[in-house]
Image (tube, rainbow over all chains, first blue to last red):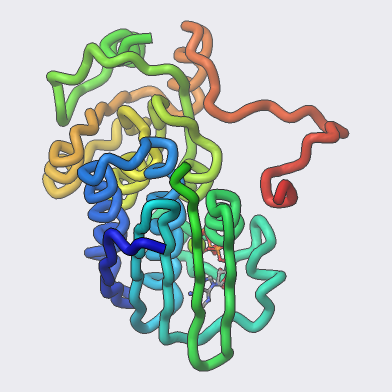
Length: 141
Length: 130
Ligand SMILES: Nc1ncnc2c1ncn2[C@@H]1O[C@H](COP(=O)(O)OP(=O)(O)OP(=O)(O)O)[C@@H](O)[C@H]1O
Ligand SMILES: [Mg+2]
């Protein structure tokens, strides 16, 4: 595992003003690094859905990206309410988004399923009252 | 279909990246749900939406949507236009409703970005695939 690049970003809950900034920055960075467009799109979609979930549901979180010669790994951890029933949260269409979030175009209940779909490896852990952690791995080749 | 043709068919007003109007658009996609766009769109689509906020632009940039058409006369504010300009995404506005705008583009031959899955098809929604 030759580490070639690593960066951590902070994401604040309820900060709709800046929501999406981290993921769009990541996408721009991956383009500069010359990663293949299909890979960039998968990473960017997974990051954006994860970022929006922190903004919508958690207090604060971090997104860490580690790139080596084989893969891009995204680790997203937040401090927040956690998820009581992960299987339910992973179900397409399940959402607890508020009316306000829905008016902004979120709350389809597609975020987590879509993160999983775009990942080659996906892990989710959550502790009620503490927070949620996602590990997303996307292979480069 | 060229974006300039779409602009003509829908009598669009243009708010950003005028210089990109000659780009080729492969698919059409219509939704007010950003996660649906992220889940089902393919690169190279035009997005028709009634949702005019920065998240619409982020969603387009993330999912390689080539241009956005706001329906029913909705117009982007300056912050949204600036964001789109910085990401090189053309923003257009039409007075047609979502239904009519989609119908007109479909009639003109623009393909859908989302694959139709017939009822009782063995093909399931993507969630169960892996
Ligand atoms: N980081 C998180 N902390 C607490 N709860 C979460 C978190 N992420 C997701 N959830 C819960 O899981 C549900 C499903 O999340 P998912 O991202 O799939 O859909 P959504 O955010 O509701 O809608 P969409 O992503 O389509 O806009 C959420 O409605 C929320 O209840
Ligand atoms: Mg979500």
